[in-house]
Amino acid sequence: MIVMKFGGTSLRNAERIKAVAGIIKSRLKQSPVVIVSAHHGVTEQLIAAARTPSPLHYARIRNLHRRITKELGLPLFVVEPLLKELEDFLETIRPDIHRSVTLKEMDEILSFGERFSCRVMAGYLNKINIPATSLDAYDIGMLTDSHFGNARPLPQSHKDITARLRPTIHSGRIPVVTGFIGKDREGNITTLGRNGSDYTATIIGAAVGASEIQLWSDVHGIMSADPRLVHNAKPVPAVSFNEAGELAYYSRRFHPSTLTPAIHKNIPVRILNTYEPTAPGTTISAARPKKTTVPDKAVKTIVYKKDLFLVTITSGRMLMQYGFLAKIFSVFAKYKIVIDMVATSEISVSCTTDRKDHIREALKEIARFAGVQLDEKKAVVCVIGENIKYLNGLSADIFMALKRAGVKIHMISYGATGINIAFLVDNRDVRKSVRSLHRLIY
Ligand code: ASP
Ligand code: MG
Image (tube, rainbow, N blue to C red):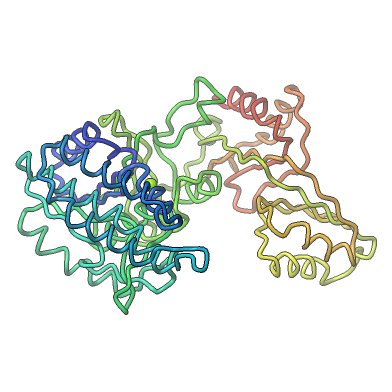
């Protein structure tokens, strides 16, 4: 059994939905369980519809679903009852200047996106004689806590999903399940957070003991570098769970919990492209690092993140003192500022964050007991690969290459696990840095 999850861009119109159906058809032997996101852009439209009283957004959502349904040659009743339900619901919660929608109401509204696309996908599969059943995730056991907007599945879900998917699977019908949504114990609809459909896929994959969890979208899997910066960047065939964990920080594409259920059950996750269904994509699995001395085998990818703040804190009193770092970090914690990279010396601490909110207030507070400096427009560039620890002299080569490219380095971090070497540069040096490192390694 495999899980196949299709993202919103892969379901953006009738033509792409037909392509997806073709991909499902080509893998029927592996007994797929299909998970779908909302059609591209629908989640955003639903957010807009919930926030503004204008009927325009609802009209757009209605037209899009009617158009897709018609173009697929499906009867309108596949979407009409849900459209009516959405329209009524929006009517009852109409926000105004005195009241904005609650997180709970928002989750109910957002759930419509996946509920629509799941019915459309199953409807189309049936139309082309692939027996399929559309299922709302909460009806097959996706039980979550009541953390609206960012709900977590409860442990009980695991058993329930296993049991409740079984009848559909045994009947030979393809289950087509809504990504992203669940219900809490009171029966309120919840969502797992933006991009949560991938997380649904791994939760369900773990519950049914899938041999593989496939995440289909319309881009290549993981690339050796950003193809917008490096024209000969190439797809990376395999990364480990640990490497993917490091990568997740640099890509907004992933819900942070996506890999957890797969890691638990040791199920490989594959990232695949609907435009190139036979390409191998990238497999994320528990593969063990193998000793190598070849850079292009050890380094998997070069990534970056721009627009970071660099905070430098200095204090003469730090010398031979304890508790100083604790004091600084308790201020960051108070303002909920997430710190990414840290470097310390006897009398100074440098750290980076991407959170603009409250940084100035936090620094004001720290300034009462230490010197502070804030620099903006910094970027972290990171070389990721579980085997880089075996490459003697890689850091020397990296810094030589950067020196030759004329890049100024502000901070360096080489983690204890030896998975990555990261350094901080100016935003404007990212292109140069990534290019020169890619040339060095590939
Ligand atoms: N439709 C939801 C979103 O756009 C969930 C997902 O696409 O994974 O965030
Ligand atoms: Mg989406």
